[in-house]
Image (tube, helix red, strand yellow):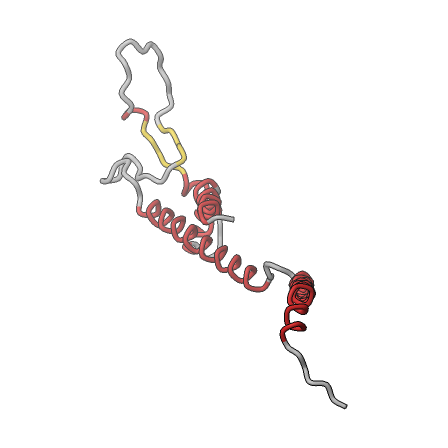
Length: 162
């Protein structure tokens, strides 16, 4: 599993789910989710919407709620991002960082505990290597005796004992 995949999965969890915003809301509200939905909605005054002059419709709707974390129209910072948006963003980025580090730590621990080559395979390879070495030595010895024993037998005459 590559680091890019881990970071991608962490971003999907952090930014597309409500796990982090709910967790932050619980931390600020004594482990309670009462009012969470209203906290995630922003208010828009429909009178602030610029209509085209050819619009021939009338409506009694003056307030619209939408998903976002912005100040209401009667606030001095009208429609700008609230501070809790930045807390949520910081929490999501922290989650990505922590998630990535935890997964990499688990991966390193697993790689260190699980061997790349099992013990029985290593033992078989070792015995096979010893057998091959012994076979090579045997062949070399046979070739040596076959090729060179006659040369040494003729050139060296050993004294005979009586």
